[in-house]
Image (cartoon, rainbow, N blue to C red; front, side, top):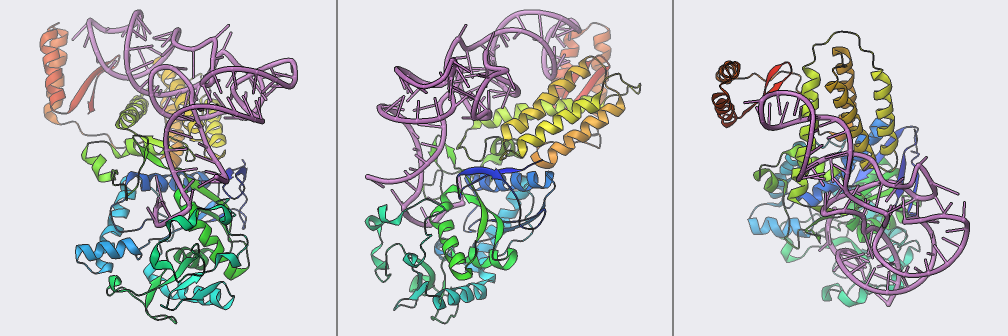
Length: 468
RNA sequence: GGCGUGGUGCCCAAGUGGUCUAAGGGAGUGGUCUGCAAAACCAUUAUUCACCGGUUCGAAUCCGGUCCACGCCUCCA
């Protein structure tokens, strides 16, 4: 089945065709490790997770590279404030980043290159750019990219530099540049940088922000690769600058497909670290929101649409997930070994087809999720009419496990949770109370069991005890 | 000033020329089941898709205009 994606380069949905058969090279802009990731950051990483899982589901092999930006203005500034060496400071937040993506069940990329491990590659690339006339050095020892030497500049963001207000907000300390829109390839050391510097042919300094992505993508994915993703705010100038650097240096197309994830809003306002209106994953977990529910909220809005984050949405997600868990439980409880008359294979096949089709349509997540819900409804009906055999139930669960390869939100309790002896005794006591029609006592016991964190539900096959 | 996105039921959210009297989820209401609950199921909540015009046999979907919201052009997922 075809896999279509919306390519920012031409603003059109088109079929995704990798350079090498079914092997996909993806570069994703990763975190700047100067603080905990906020849920806006995580939405982007979540989009990239769904993307890689969806591509795998469609039979592609993935090599995903995600950079860790561990040297730029903010990391230097904040490590200084913390009074820690840069490396020690960023290390903490690298660790936190991996904890967060594990919590959200985000699959690991194949490579996580850190900027500070690739200074040599960056210097080499800058030398090539200077040699080809795209880079120039200023008196202070910085190197800039001359965008007027690169006629395609602006092709991704559809920006014509002639019409920009760029002159209005120029920092006074950047007067050395030939043109105010030129961006730094190498930044000369200043006092604020402290002991953060590397030696280069232009003296002590550190790389510009954009150059790391060009250098590292080239190293791990080649001069031209399939897919580059990131937040929409990275489109300009970051990605535009990457294209300029890479294509100027290599004389080749940098990337075939670009995908950009929209913002996450909180109370309909853009969320960003500089505005300070952000929630980290840890904030949400402290409010006792399940990671699965957070994941569900973050994936269930299409990546090209703004996602307005609310706590109500988290509650809705929790409820929706509960419904699936109830269904899994009922399926696991089936003991009916009789061959059923229903054609479960056909039902499951239809659901998988719908799921796959929607997923391959530029990650139409609403349709994808719709297929999962529709199957749930059908299965529940069959469960009500007692027409599912043990064998069918297994097939249904297998199908949901398939869905889960992409969605990553379901928990399949293969092992039965041990109900404590005490709870079992209370439930038994309640049963005998019920038999004696002492419902007051029965209800009392049910409440008591609930206070202990368990729930008793009466089913046609007797009571069922569930962990709340 | 230039560029861009979106406005679909109580909330979230698909659909982008006919199968749409608009998928799906959450919430509410009524019912089935139950001693009562819970779960599940059934029914119900937009003759309508911001507004006004136009194109068309036919539009939520295309075109023009208006209003509203948000964003980029500056570090930012």
